[in-house]
Image 1 (cartoon, rainbow, N blue to C red):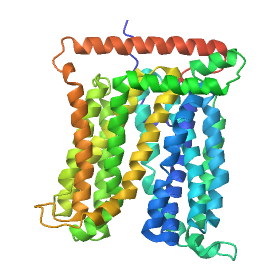
Image 2 (tube, rainbow, N blue to C red; image 1 turned 90 degrees about the vertical axis):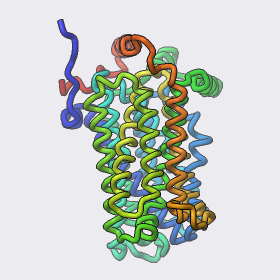
Image 3 (tube, rainbow, N blue to C red; image 1 turned 90 degrees about the horizontal axis):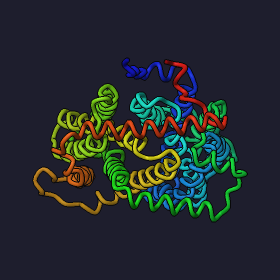
Image 4 (cartoon, helix red, strand yellow; image 1 turned 30 degrees about the vertical axis):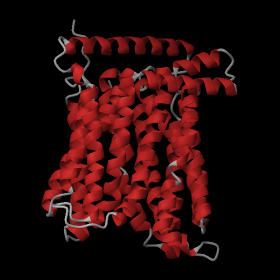
Length: 474
């Protein structure tokens, strides 16, 4: 008898059922998150110029360093659905205060609070995915969640552009001049977080095996228990090189990719001598490449048994493409290399998350994903913050094709990703040529699936965690 179950299509997974609601909530909330980021940058520019933007971006780094370990501990110890709802509703309440952020310290204070809530919701969302879909649908689920997280960037930017055309609707004596053009964006943003939180609230509880055990013991979590949980997570990350590879690789990828967000437009306009149409072309190429990369790994997921090898190769491809794009002289050349960069980035993100979902035990996933997303956000915002000052410091000429500071910054961003991917492949060199590798890999995956099914059966008996939430689409 053939036990193989045909994976669901992406369309079927987001059409109906609990996972569909989970995904739509993530897409709506992510749109709001990007609205906030772009609008906050605009306000920071109005208040303090380039220095204000730098301070606003770097204010998103501190919460990841301080708050990340705590988020990981409570993600594994509490109902993940409840944490997501708290994060979304909390942001819905706080975002409107940005309308009155007339000073840089006030803007930083609100931004830090929002970033803490973003981290509180991001790790539980990722950790909950394996309990919501069957194992054969995990790659497609991660692809969809990636689309919800980063495919909404254009929507966030478009909202800010459109809403900034109607400042007169909200201009009043109590609204500072620096935020008048963005007030509607912040109001709409609050609504997106409210809708996202209310949708997630309709889902069944999403508790890890550790959370169920804690609840059975009375549900009390002491401070020392949280500290012990953080220490256990740190030890796990220290021992497991496979997990560390993914975290380091994805952090490097976001660090290098952040340079494109900030330097991309000056590179097209000042170096390639093109207009906004050229910038739109390379952004579109990057997005299309990412979409194809995501679709490709989803379609061939059953054949890509070495998730870590595919991940490392994709990171290297992403970095090499960006460095080569920095040396071209035409928009067409930049479009070609940015397409390949998107292809590698999309595949790397999906394979990295999938490897963690298949490799990390359910009761440890919150701590692992909190560390991952904290480091990724630090890498992204640090690179966005230092890219422009670095371009100013590298005011040199005459280094062959790298004859412009913007070229140099993009080249170094790509080089960081390329070196990271190369180092990851080097650390995996013992796998190449190992006999019966595919059979051994299938055995590992089967063992993880068996443990996951046993965990779900225990959760189902406790009446706190639903069965695979994509079964309605089967």
